[in-house]
Length: 190
Image (cartoon, rainbow, N blue to C red; front, side, top):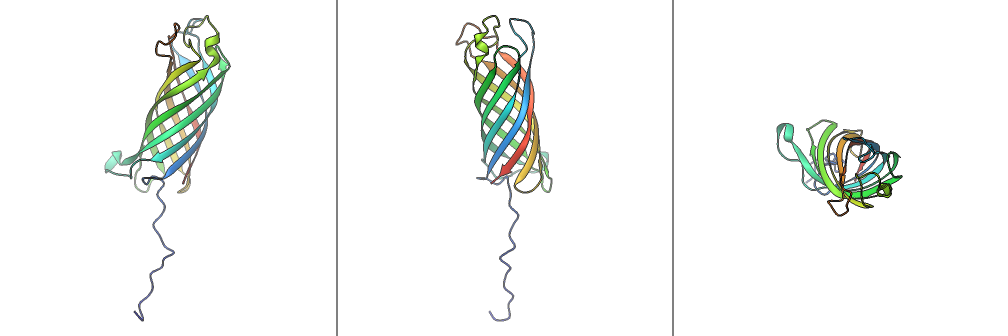
């Protein structure tokens, strides 16, 4: 109609990195330190390395209060060098389920996650130790993290994790390795 102002189509809703269907790519560096009985049979194992993750937002942000957030599924690849203990290398892949605590208007986004996958390590070649008895083992992990959104597309993160490695009795040596550690890194949302 004549005389009516036209709507400004250049103004749109801000982009929501946690909207259902969006994707996140993470790169991080970190370390893990095993704990428990530190002997030749179950030695301390320290590994330092990096992880790359690709995540998919499974749900939109929902709920109210402190539990307001969404679910995310991630696939992770990890590679590291063993700097203390038997072996030289540890590499693996993990599937993770994460809950993001997304508070309206906050740039801080805490989360918790649980996951499992598989690892390869050459630590099994040291036959004195009984913690890692085969080249392929299972990896179970859980932890907490915190992101700071630098923009709608980029964030920095820090997280603390517990990791258990075991071959589930598929080899004679299977005391397992329990470790704590974590990552610091960058996230990009698209």
